[in-house]
Length: 127
Image (cartoon, rainbow, N blue to C red; front, side):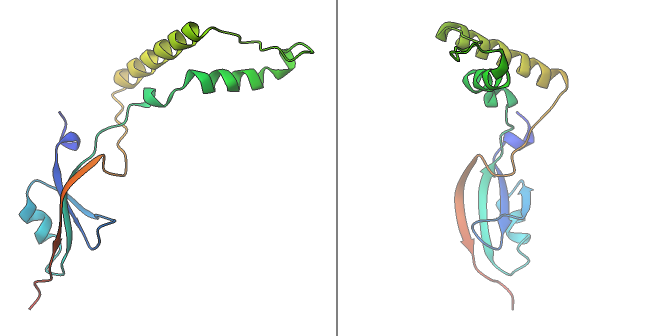
């Protein structure tokens, strides 16, 4: 498991945006607030798999639209496939995308957290 998938501490001035982190400890997240107070949270980011964003139905619809001039006068579909064939297409293309992502060692990290817990308000400690 990479560091990005592990639960790490983050801190920020409000509960919507955590600009500091990741930190290994809760204390490091609190220290990053510099005594001004704010919020800390235990969170993680899990890399995205590009293959999960391929949808065979959408692909076939787009292909059909692009091949519109190849249709007959009744507008019958050019790329007419069964549900089983469509499922097979989706599985094969997703597998190819997975292999491509792995071969190029590509990691797509989301901006937002995939999970959070232990959100806590930290009061100001300035003297």
